[in-house]
Figure 1: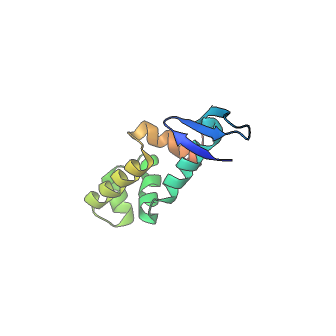
Figure 2: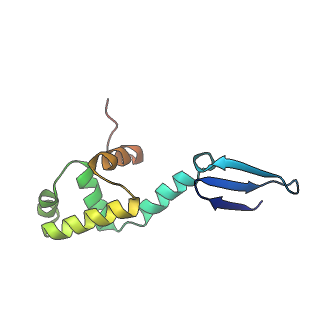
Figure 3: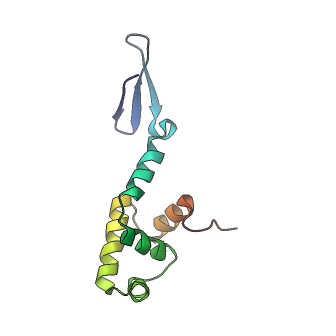
Length: 106
């Protein structure tokens, strides 16, 4: 079965000649794979910084905890968010809860 991705949809080939089935990407599981693959692309230090940032620590606090400069902490944080396509603290917390980095609120 041939499969190719077009925009926000996944196009899946059908065994019947000329027939094509179109499903949203979320139903195809591609969104989950992209989230996993993006997290796997983070360095260990970017993951450490991401976890601490998700807990609400500032770059200065992260720097102090990891014995790095605040600028380095901010760079790791920015790189992590860029790689994961996350914009802002709210999205970061949602991502962390969904990924199991933070416990879900009761």
